Length: 125
Image 1 (cartoon, rainbow, N blue to C red):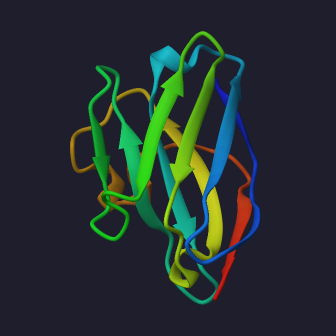
Image 2: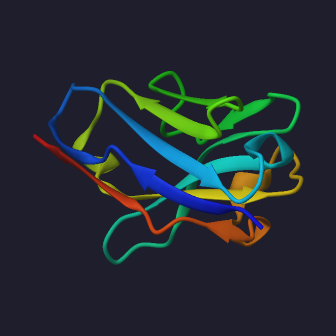
C-alpha cells in the first residue's frame, strides 16, 4: 500500500503563492487517483482538488482559477500550486489517494482510503 508524506506548508501573506508537495512511497503514484483536502479548525475536512488516473482534474469552486493540482509520476509526487492565497485558505492540507475515483470524488473524504498527516498553510491578511 502507498504511504503519503506532505511538505511545503508555511505562512504567507494574502495574495501570495505557495506550492505544497506529497511524496508517495511503497507503490507507484501512477496507480492512484490522488487529491488534496483541507481542514480548518472547527470545520469539516473539505476536498480541494483531485487528479484522476487519466490526468483528469477537478477543483472545489472556492479554489478554481487559483490552485493547480499536478502529479509527477516519475518522481512519485503530487503537487498543489496555490496562487492568490486568501486568509480563508488557512488550513491543514492533506494528501489522499485511492485506486480509482469519479469526477465528484472530492465531495466526500470517504472516497479516499490512503492519507498523509498533513501540512499547515497559514495565510495572513
